[in-house]
Length: 183
Image 1 (spheres, rainbow, N blue to C red):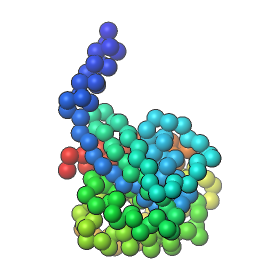
Image 2 (image 1 turned 90 degrees about the horizontal axis):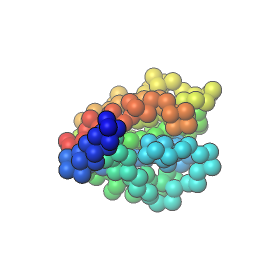
Image 3 (image 1 turned 60 degrees about the horizontal axis):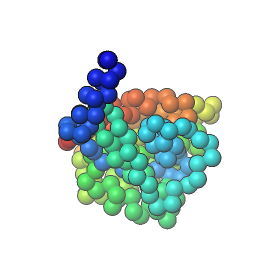
């Protein structure tokens, strides 16, 4: 009977008291944005993801919070639309492939370009170093330095190392995002 009560309780909470928040997920191509959202929304990790063309919308339910996540393409031709999809969201998630060292300078440039928009002022930023399961990867401290996260002002900035494949640190990601629900 406890399981049935829990299901009814969860349904009532989602239906009548759920909070919704919008999150935009950006980063260079092949950083793992779509894979992360697939895993967070209850799906499986797949190695053969196709690149996102334009954007996708994924919904992630966590307790009584519904995260509506905009997954934006990371190819150069889509980066100009990042700012538009980041306006007015509860949080911005920037994903970096920490095993692809040659792409780190480009990631830093794109991140700082995005953070320079006045329209995005005050929106919390969560930087995720994805692919922490790979052997030749950066540490979180090295990523913080390489992306010069200390120079980003006027917003909360947080950085975690994660692995969408191994589901490492994903609880911390969701907790950070849920913290900003309703703000």
